[in-house]
Length: 92
Image (cartoon, rainbow, N blue to C red; front, top):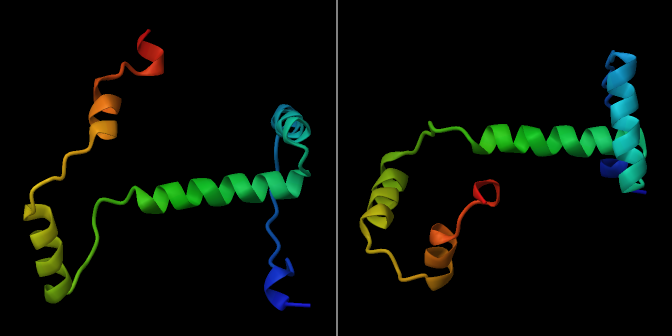
């Protein structure tokens, strides 16, 4: 058995009863246990936080490559164009 699948790093939380009930309801809808639901949700949000960072550090070669990619003309993308003119779901 691979040790990479063994959960051995404890994470403990205290929640209000209403929070636990809400989490349990969502778990039931998805057919997941509380631990799996909370870990998946927390990891997904952690990835979003990390991906949303606006500052990143590059060495000179990587920065030059990045700048050259930004300077290239944009390829036509009809699917993206259609998406950008479509109203957002909350707009009507």
